Image 1 (cartoon, rainbow, N blue to C red):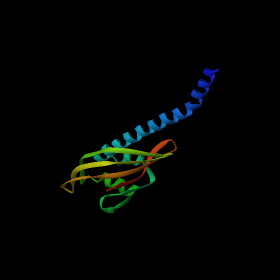
Image 2: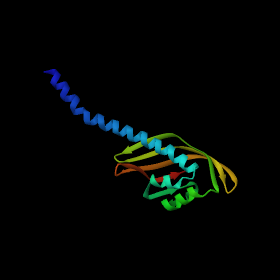
Image 3: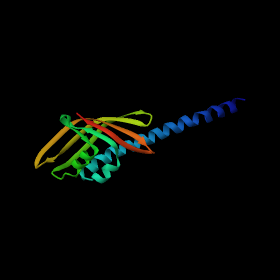
Image 4: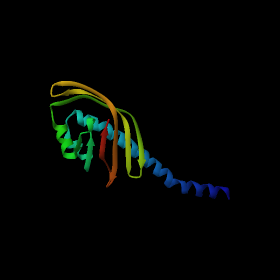
Amino acid sequence: MLRPLILLLALSALPLAQSIFRAQGDETKIIALENLWNQMHINHDADAMGTMLDSDFVLTGYGGRVMSKAQFLTSIRDKSNQLTVEVSDDMKLHRHGDTVVVTGATREKGTEKGKPYAHQGRFTDTWIKKDGQWLCVAVSYV
């Protein structure tokens, strides 16, 4: 009598376990996308970056500058800004259904129009799952 009850409980918990594993897999994908973002930025790969961005993407940069997807991709193509280091760490993911908000720290080094710069700050990225694909819809740097 106890065995069928345990089996029934185990089977009823299976969808929850699958949901947790799927969520953990999505979180791993998003961390990978965050790290890939940095490499695409360094390599000026605006075409690849564009595939990660939602059509309504918006970026709020240091100093309050706001850019659309098209403006951001233009800035990625701009070779007068040469990033040599872009590292994200201390990332924490906050999931709300098919939306994940990532907060973390960022460090950048490079040259802009020939002048060296270094910046450390914090970021908030918002990812949405659309048609089975994670897309970044908003980024904010402080």
